[in-house]
Structure formats: C-alpha cells, structure tokens
Image (tube, rainbow, N blue to C red; front, top):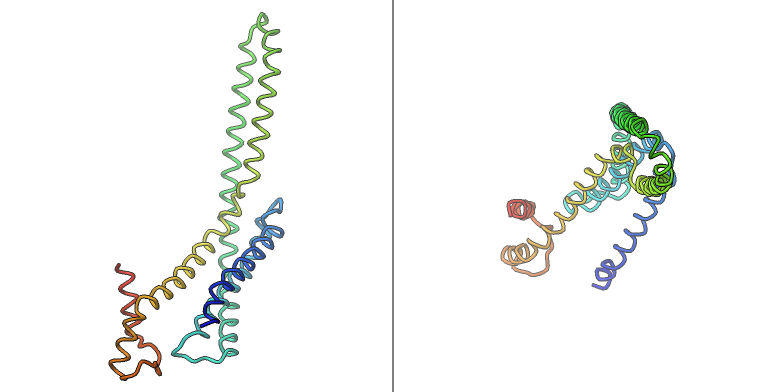
Length: 231
C-alpha cells in the first residue's frame, strides 16, 4: 500500500523531469537552429524508435498473460524500435523532406508576392504626393516611420516566438502517435478502475475466496473496453 501511494507522487515528478529534459534536448539541437529541418529529419528515426521502445516494452513486460521475462521484453522492444526507425529513415524522412520543402517554397513565394505588392503601393503613394505637401509629409513621415519600426520589431519578436513552419510540419504525425499511446494508457487505467468491482464480485462467486489467485479474465477487460468506448 505504501509503495502504491508513493508511486502517485513519484511518477508525476519523474515524468515531469524526463519531459523537461527531452524538451531541452530538442530545443537545443533542433528548435533553436537557424534551419531546423535537416537536424529534425536526422533525429526523427531516433525519436520514433524511442517512443516505440518505451511503449512496446511496457506492454509486453506488464502483460499479466504473457509473463515475459524482462530481458526478452527488452529484446523484442529493441527489435521493433529498430524496425520502425529503419522504416522512418528510408520512407518517412524522404517524404517529409519533399513535402515540407514544397510547402516552404510556396510560403516564400507568397511572402515575395506580398512584399512586391507593398513596394508597388508605397511607390505609387510617393508619386501621388505633391511638392506642396512635401515638407509636411517629411515631418509626419518621421513619426510614421518610427511607428512602423516599432511595429516591425514587435512583429519580428512575435514571429520568433512562434514555431517555425518546418518544425510544426515535422512533428505533426509524431504528436498524433504519442497522443494515441497516451489515450491507450489512460484507457487501460480507466478500464481497470471501471471493472475492478465487477471482477472482484465475479471471482468471489467463481472461486469462493476474496484472494485473487488468477489473472483478470480477458473477456471482462474486453467488456470494460467496449463499455467505455461506447459510453
């Protein structure tokens, strides 16, 4: 009981520390780079491999029906992680590079068109000004120019705080994958909490004892999973 209660405090703390460390590594080696695309593509198979290794090892090692020895679970998890990393390197990375490069080129073309349009508007505005108002425009222009400079600096700061387009595109599917694993973990915990009383009553009825000597029947887990999904 003490170890269970202690895990409620230790697990979130350790998870937070690991999350912060992972974020710092990604920020230093990928996010803060001037061109984060190539470092991100190089790191992508490694990140996928680590995600697959952790989740596969947890599933196999903690499975009450397989009773897998820990080193066998590690070997299976490493094998699947290397397989997924190879698939990502040879198939996902080239596709991601092509897709992101094309989107960046289209984005640069749009920005160039907007810049040309603004230059033309400014040029036409200058030509329409008369010599009579030139002195007035000079004095007012300084204030406007100062205002534009402040706005440009603010805009550049806001853009620097936002994720770069290639970064957001690079980790989109990985975020979906980790969200699926997170939903799987939460769903398993919710199923256990939901069917716990049912399993206890059923085993007392079948075995005539409150001490559970056998594992939870698989059909009760299926029942709980279907019930939560439908609900």
